[in-house]
Length: 278
Image 1 (cartoon, helix red, strand yellow):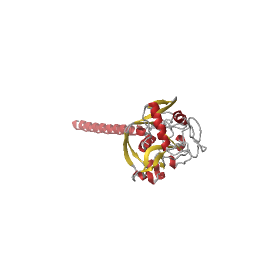
Image 2 (cartoon, rainbow, N blue to C red):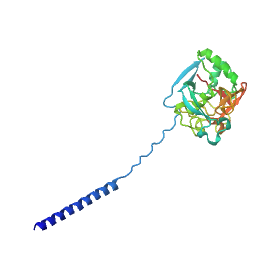
Image 3 (cartoon, helix red, strand yellow):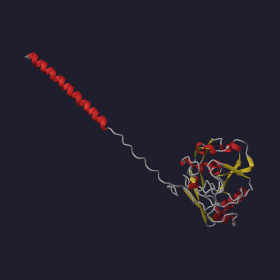
Image 4 (cartoon, helix red, strand yellow):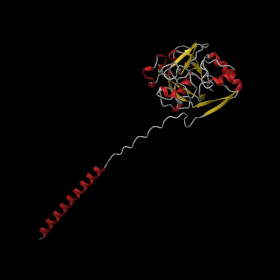
């Protein structure tokens, strides 16, 4: 009898162990089967607007005409033909180099004909319009204008350096690395050969860059304060002054952020104007 009971007890223990193993296996199977991966849809990018949400600026007035200067926070960037420029980059851009700048202000727009006339008393532009950029102004003419503007305002306006110009066109420390100033699609931010109708247009007609600065690609080329240096490395050629940004009669390549050009100090052209720095 004892032998029979012992045998029965062993049988019951064995059956219990098998039952537990089945439960464990079922639980494991259920857990594995019920596990699913949920992929959340990516949020759609917010569309660019004509005015960035946060812009630090100062407004000034000269003989009744107001203009705005945008603050560019200082920082370090790679100047020249960065990868975004691709195969369009020219030899004069290809010595990519690191530049560090202190904070400064730069014009929200190119100097308009209204502001030029308020300071100088005349308007040399070929394509007339108060809110169009002034053009047909040489580098020497710009220096005369700036001297008079500083006398009127008591400030120290100047032309931007070539590095300051490019850093602002990149979008400063808010840069998204676009090929053109504010976009990889030129027509969104620039008046150029395919959409200009062979003339300049009023400023702020296209989207701004990341800093809230308009028309740094297209409309008119812009004088800088720098003498020309081939590929940033050759000796300065001060009979040539650097211009940047491309203009209404240029195609894609000339309107890129890193594209460079030059003109003599006395050169006038209806595709060349300027923007102030402070």
